Length: 345
Image (spheres, rainbow, N blue to C red):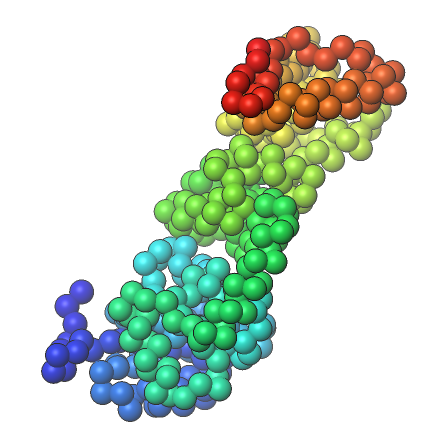
């Protein structure tokens, strides 16, 4: 984008969105004192901010972490904007330097953070720094953020990752757990497929999952969307009312897309329904497909464990089967065992 020039420095267009219209105007007036900044004022509500980003050409977004009298609402808006505009350069105006708030701001997509206690001159420097592609934070803020990040690393990756998801990311993950495609999720949420794809990349980055299947395994037992599927058969007996045909058709579509949870639910529902001889055949088909996916996953996992760990896992599984009165014989599939760099088959 061609920019106006003033001397040797480029003119930087700043879109300002503070928590109230009055604060936005005051902040904009203060920034106008810098002759190298061109201020574009936005409304203080989500709709106005989103519309302003679409209507105006700007280089840096300056947004409050709190909007519409809701803590962190500005961070949610920023996260949505960054999902559709990955190269967006944004500065978040914080009400405090709490470590978790700083981390949230950077996770939402901020390139710079500063509190309301900073001077206008410092804010101008921050905007220029972010415009030039750098990250802006005070040494104290960096220290606090690193301390909080270090503490977070002691948590399990799945638990930590899932807790970092924004409301919009959770909605997308729940839709994913239902077996929807990117196009269907986009239609449901009123977003573009490109935006959904960017959101998923952010979810993978936060959770440590490398693909959809890993994410679904991670969500198993934690995510409400996946759990609702599991409840179809974990709380069901043979005399319970079965879901209607439309609901079963939804599981069928998700199963066809390779969603393991949906395949398991569908197999169980068909087994209970037994409306036609084909139900039994289809249930068995899905059980075979599930078995293959689980065996493949166990092989991959087995390659990462030592012989001692694998034997311990097999013993625990055998004990559980004996205690529940089931066949203690484990599957006859060979699982690669790794020890000291060697694989034993």
